[in-house]
Length: 120
View 1 (tube, rainbow, N blue to C red):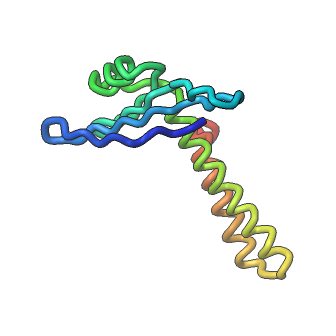
View 2: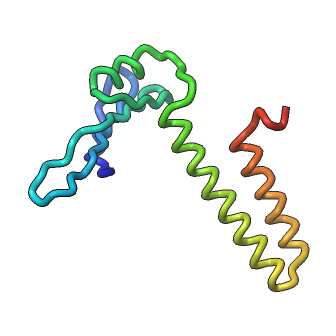
């Protein structure tokens, strides 16, 4: 995937952010293909196959279930969990049990954020 240029467009009293995502072609000389458009407006992030669909979803203000936004959040939380696990391993190898415990607690929090319904 190739990210296009981020556009920041003043819209009323707010800003509208638009970023296209392209699939890069494998054969030489072929043009990238537009696959998705990400739009952020008033704190709502939407992704769709076309600009019209992304704008309609973002400007309608409807909250959606799942989708690309949650996937991005999940990936960020997974990176946080991986970093905490690395710190725990390093602390354990160096004999720092307090650091090990703190890193494990951070790992628990990161995992809980990835699946909040599991704690219910």
